[in-house]
Length: 163
Image (cartoon, rainbow, N blue to C red; front, side):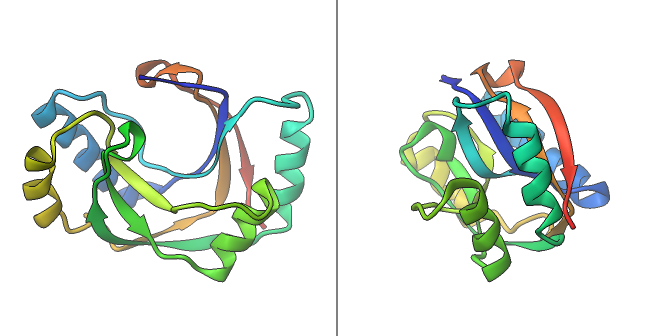
């Protein structure tokens, strides 16, 4: 499946990044799916006004402090980009950041572990046995990614420090 537009992510650093990316890569190897960097999408499929996006993201990032991202239970849906994921705790800080980027809108904060079309029977044992490799991480920047096309072609564009 291909994605469209650009996305704004919160990404772990250091050991948290290594452990989460390791889990994603391990699942990809086991399931035959494409690995991707660990992230929480705060805004996705941005296709309009790309010329002013960096300055807008810089301004939003400066007005929001770094925040703690807490990973919760594992779940799966019949949606390609939410095949297998950890829910992310809704906090006032995370909600304020999302609203600054997208305005009031429905959103399920999550950290994906696998993209694909897996059957429920294939996912259930993984969900039952999927404690997060880290319980939380500090997000200290907004990461702008070009997410046009297949997952293995996505690339980073810019980083905007929070605070």
